[in-house]
Image (cartoon, rainbow, N blue to C red):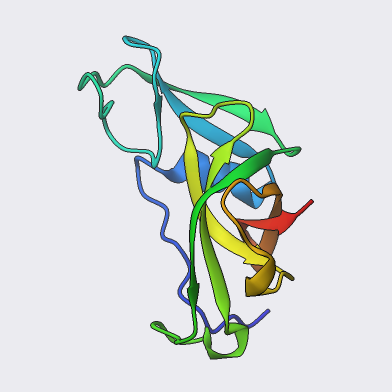
Length: 138
């Protein structure tokens, strides 16, 4: 599979997130000290600074609500020119409203997107061993 777009790089802080995405599942870091979710993943909790983090598996049936969005009519990175216009959304998870995940809303007219719109996570296969979370309207 040949993919022309940049592929997110796994590192020591985010590899459980990307490993789960590659299996078409969502995992989110959770602080064991204060109980807050930490997304995007990092070496410590953004709220309290603790490095006592675990991973909570939300599975593969992920629903959310559009919290904010932008429609891009210009490709800012190589490989995106055929996807225009591109709807880039911040989505609040239904099962963890404090977690917001950025992704594209696929197969949707920019005229139909609105704050509060219900969406469902889907995974786009970038290569044989890499998938990224995206959104579709429900």
